[in-house]
Length: 242
Image 1 (cartoon, rainbow, N blue to C red):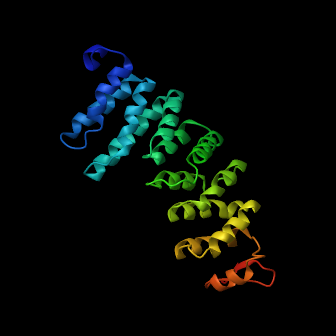
Image 2 (cartoon, rainbow, N blue to C red):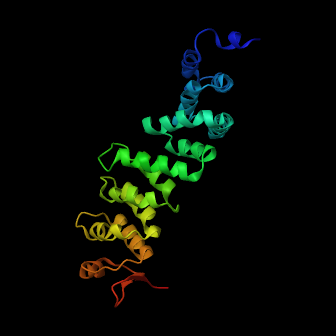
Image 3 (cartoon, one colour):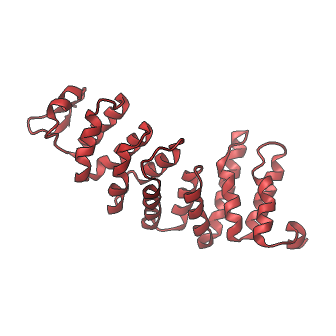
């Protein structure tokens, strides 16, 4: 059977779009979806990448099937190598879903410094403006946590002012180990803010302790909020007992 018999006529983009309905079919015979995934991989063109990425945006039952299909799709995309980079990067920018898969793919295809650049650029684009679903911001912030790159702290800092508590917490966890001096004041303001949720305050305490920042200008408020095991020492540093 030739390639035209499998896919029919038309451009690669048209062939990919014809397969999209089958790839995103949640119910019915799973072999239909699995065959479409394989056919898209065999096209080996950038237009097929966006359709394959759509498989990461939903879940099917049973979970073992879902996991197997996503891992297979991931491997197909990795096999495309550099040809997958641009469309996966575009997916990261355009989609509100499956950001973790996009970052995982980019990490498999590019040096870490380049992926960090894409992640920080996307955070800059998103900004701390209100979004109905903050998941993408959290995924990007979690991806950057624990990494060392001069671009990270500057990109993360604005998210201490985000509308979502989950985003604020993710930003605090990313900033803590970086010891980024411009973050000291915003972290203290977040900790001592009257409307700050308790769980955010707990992570702000942890981040300030990890950053080894002094609480000058906020000592009285911080002492009132610091709960065991945290305390403010005579030098104005947030310490941890034990």
